[in-house]
Length: 256
Image (spheres, rainbow, N blue to C red):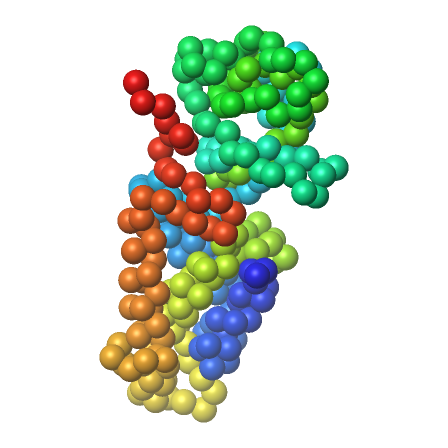
């Protein structure tokens, strides 16, 4: 299920606020409130190691390529899954690689040692480190070293989680959108004023739109319900975003 663009999301917030006067709740104010709530959710999940916005890219390693420079994207930071990919084979069975540290990749997965020839996906693990020949540039080191061309898909947490344009998605995972929408609506209501209403009437309408926390269907009730779901998901040891079930920490960590 696709998520809303920032433009669509702003429109949804204004509709949920019953179309207040533009000077009281402008598009720019809704965008600002949305960014604030995104930052709060992002910070909350970063503290627990739970990715909620993700990006991905495909990279292709060449035979005998020890370090693959990450030049495919500009916002790469922390990878949380790497899987085999074969664009030419729709029936390709995906295999998830171990995310290793550079030392263990050498000790346990034969990083730097050339794999058997003619096999596409020989890598058992991958380590992300600084490129030894290009300081400051991130690189992926597949272990063992590939002996045939192979493609891999990298899923990662980007260093930019806010939408940068009106056409950008507000979130990557659809299950977070209603939660974010409810938070932004509740944050926006105190600013709202409506045509033909005085101060007291505006306050009464804000309270009515917020609703009773005990009344199903109200924004206040919806927030409590969604926040409880969010908290449970945040505390899970495994997270399923409809892509892969990804254990947090080091993927597939070996026992010593």
